Length: 138
Image (cartoon, rainbow, N blue to C red; front, side, top):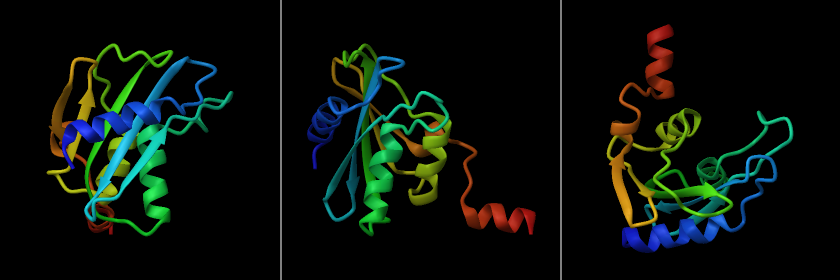
């Protein structure tokens, strides 16, 4: 799938965001190795910490359906659904991506004029997998 199509699906997903507290809506579209796509949006909660990001929503939906091999994700966001710039995934989302994705996993950051492309290694240079964590502490 072309990155532009994945970015459009992320923008579509943003329209489903539940963001009554911050007004900041985020959408994501995750491309699986088999070509299937999972969309996600952010879902806020009054207590804030139970809030779930769009990226994790998409990943968790895919994992629930049995997918574990991902190629790319497109992410967009902005106040009241207006994209005003590129917004990289938060640290928690980056580590969740690292659980399932390699260093070359593509992250397309929709910026309103197009998109920027970065890899997971660029966004999370010192990320670790469960195997690396267990061997370092075991």
